[in-house]
Image (tube, rainbow, N blue to C red; front, side):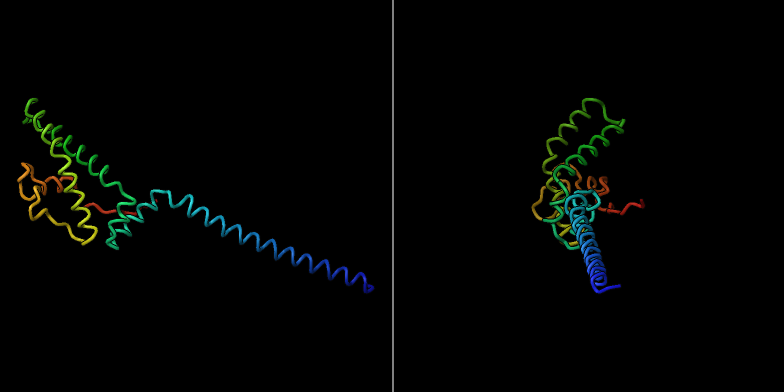
Length: 167
């Protein structure tokens, strides 16, 4: 083999090695970019991510982060509606007029109860313990005409925890 052919083959091999290295670099960059896009534009918008952030915020006692991922106003409002509906649906001792009177009462006290639930949740997140209303709170005892502690107990709020699914 002459020198010209030999040099041509060496140049071909060097070019092939450079092309191969460039292809590997492009693949690695594409995988990194794809992972970044998946994480920030897909995964961070999933319910699993939100639940992980909720758990992290509870463990780190960060109420602001908790409120970023949970709309407590909406959740507490719907839970209150479901709970009061359930309380009256199965109570056969109430006649229709008494049931209507109680339903109106529960609608009137709803903002106060929801506010109390939010404060209880915030206290739990920031301090790590469930505390009953105290001081001048209208929810303390039965001043409002409702047993707030019993209502919260019926929501199972204090015994509910976030679990990772088995799937």
